[in-house]
Length: 272
Ligand SMILES: C[S@@+](CC[C@H](N)C(=O)[O-])C[C@H]1O[C@@H](n2cnc3c(N)ncnc32)[C@H](O)[C@@H]1O
Image 1 (cartoon, rainbow, N blue to C red):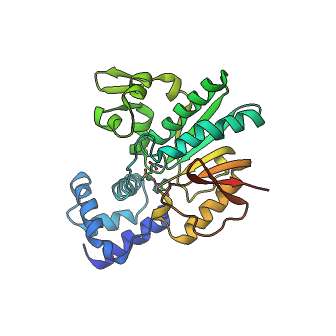
Image 2: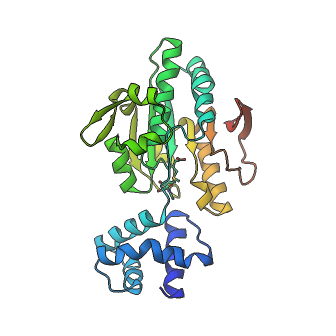
Image 3: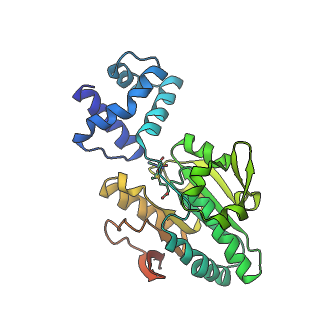
């Protein structure tokens, strides 16, 4: 891969999905995209790079494949488990108490579904605790249609389940089928999935009581992070909450968001 091919990929990723790649990542790009040469029948990286700059259905498929190859989809059940404890014990009960009607949650960059389904399990437990069935709707979005297809199927391997789920939760919410373990429809039914690029306007998604935006901002520049978080504030209902991952910090203070420290975790509340 030539330096000029690398620069074109670098620009494409930054403009198309906000991902910032340092100049030292040429080797990573070459490794991740090598498999696409045979899939698209290209004889060189230059041919791949020429096609990515074109329009038409083939170029669109190629762009999707490049984004898929370059994004990291790592996720697991109850990731940052203290956040989910707080969600179940404090945040859902508080919102159920103060708000009538459906409670809406957005899992932005949801990968293969473990995050929104974990939220759904927490909603089930929070309802159980108060002896009610308050309606909770969760939307999981991601730029990658490949991971969204896995999320929609809601069937996971033994290995995927072993990452974050204890035996009791596994037997409570999953059923063994030929292909693996199928998530129970009570939990899966609260979640719908939609392809969505975080660089695009959020207005099409509506408003939310809670937003999870975890382990994705790390790929973006500070300007893009700030822009995404500021727009997320506008998509939050008054008093709504945003969770980042425990290892991510707010790039700067975001107008309208106040940090909350509770239950051993830090998250953010929309204040007017
Ligand atoms: C590491 S996973 C995080 C999954 C989950 N939120 C978690 O914390 O376990 C990052 C996800 O961000 C998605 N992603 C990357 N750029 C994106 C963009 N511009 N818009 C939407 N999703 C994006 C990737 O496809 C990937 O599935």
